[in-house]
Length: 337
Image 1 (spheres, rainbow, N blue to C red):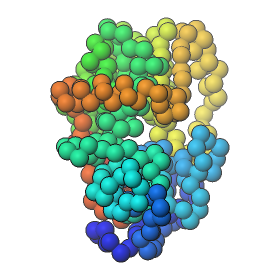
Image 2: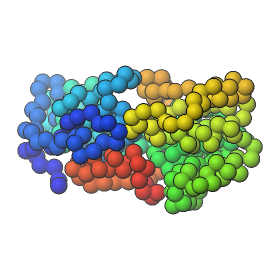
Image 3: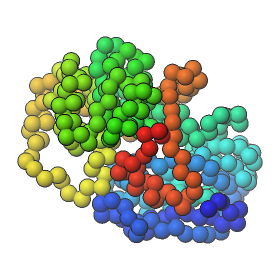
Image 4: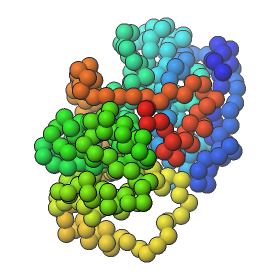
């Protein structure tokens, strides 16, 4: 269903999910298109980025950011066009990156809006490889992973927007890049299209053995997007002084309790102590926001020169957002995205 200039559709949080979001989690509402005041602009959403962090914003558990309030629109990064401007810094027709969330229209005072070039060939990439996911990969790998030529890097979630970029940067830096992905099709994409040296299917019964075979010299940098069984297989392969940028734990975002089985915390801590492993979690703009101009210059050049490959999965229509989001959490995104 296309946008209507007279109606603002918006997905609001109806209730906090227990486990995986379902049909009762979000509610589609319609309202009048808001009117901008002096100093404000009216934005029409063109692209909405769906990202795993949104699951955390549905919860009211303590976190690095405030949760979405019940009855309020879901948060999310967008590329939008300025429809009406009462702000001298923006003109009607400007395209901007905003954080206006899961809705057709939003009003903003200009704070946090980043104007995009009028001739940008792929404006949606400002939400991907040239935006937050790309910046996450670039800064987290550089500042925490500290990659060195000749080392081995393993990436969980290797075909997602962050993981795929991490692996490609690692190759540019002279590392052996091994991906972890769900299914043969995604693994083929990682090797044939993204340039990984190898990719291991975490759904295969022999996953741990396959990972060990593809990392004969151990693992120096492990980019953590997943957690769970993937981390269990990685940990024994980590070398002394290995570094782990902790970006996400998508395997447990819908969990309602701790996993079954014995307490393995002492085993984990023992491995970290004996191997002198560094693991650091980070919030990209809080920790590394000052590096964004440097990222934009370097990543922009890599993309322009074809050194970084990037694909998107486009799903048409705001009404499709909840189902697409659940598919994202399940790892159902296309290998061609």
